[in-house]
Length: 387
Image (cartoon, rainbow, N blue to C red):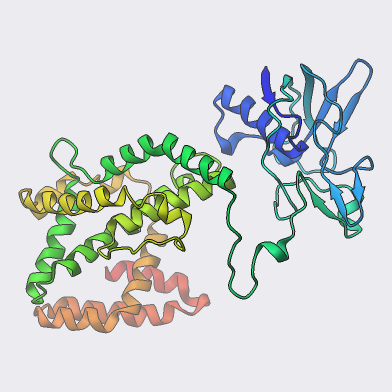
């Protein structure tokens, strides 16, 4: 399988590229992949296999610095063949090794690679330099003391060439970001899930019953109910619902997109200046379109016909078709009831629910015992019977 690598790639970078290319080709979920750290990268020669590592006895030492080995360091030629084998020093939880050969295509003109330093936890440090106190570096020697001010945590200015690349990357991804925001802040076929409509109507009723007329407060309630509680987590952590691996570089990109999403829901007007973070300046222009889209989205939901309790319950899946852990769900409800027991009891008494108030008092008394580990099982059974 041909894979394009750079001769300035460290061995860890080359391993990740080869690892990802193979499993992406096989369409293998991340949870079923052999961890890259449990594999050794070997160069297939005519007579022997050479193990390639970031650090070994051949690494170049310059004073207190130790240069990470690259493909150029090992003089890897064009169309070289690599092999992945199980790392004898690592524990392989899959109980087997993978031995796949792949062709390497090197382009010396593309001599660009991510600059890795000692702060990267994925570097393979099995050489003697790290244990002797030497500071590993990749392409450049990073002086952390001059880069960051320990008192003000102010970073140095990014060179103009990187700003250009930043804008180019943003332009490449802009279409996908727009599609994401449009899909979130628009009605699908003129409708939304009944649960969201029911929740937003309940918030509107609560505001009316409590004499809250400020639309900004209601807007904030709706922000905190769905967009900033659910969608922000999905955007920032796609691995919560997808079987994928989030690379640190991807994580930084998703952080910028999630921050833009959060700013879109905010009602405050951001004052941008030259001192503003680049992550906010990137989407300063787009925020002028995103903010009105959020307000229109809430307004469109409010204009939809109300949802009755019967219609909402009929749309929800039955508990028989859902794999629920009853004890875990009960525990979460118990924690909530214990933390807000006084408010819940007062609300029950105000609505003349005397029977429910007595049952709730019984449940709370059982929950007090539930805090004792030895009595948890018996008390949990009593709570279930009470409910």
